[in-house]
Length: 166
Image 1 (cartoon, rainbow, N blue to C red):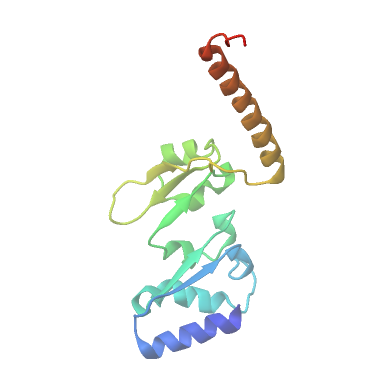
Image 2: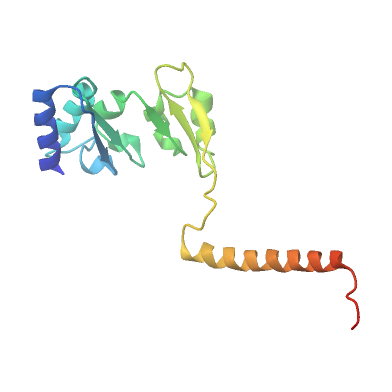
């Protein structure tokens, strides 16, 4: 990860903003922890602070924003928050107190998006996928589909009326 980040960052400092480069990191606290040392922390803070102007866009995901170096979320232009732990609420000061409290009770798929163009954070909800996402759901979906097909066949048969005798 470090070698790739360094390569992209060095290249972009010499070539300019275009083409854009996207850096996507999950578990951001492993690379830039709020406390302690990480060999990538300084580079990631630099990317967060100056990256947009050079065409390097950092997309980070983390379960607990308080575990990440404060400069990273502070420099994010787009923030997305899902269900919050009540102990994390200070980290999410970009949300109103009422929305922070409400976010502690979000259902799966509910999130809040905050970005500079719109003055208020926007709650959004992602629908459940229309397909199975694990084997257990696939088995349930198959049973439900078979039951639905049987109901349809029964209804169609009842509309057909009596069959003529030959």
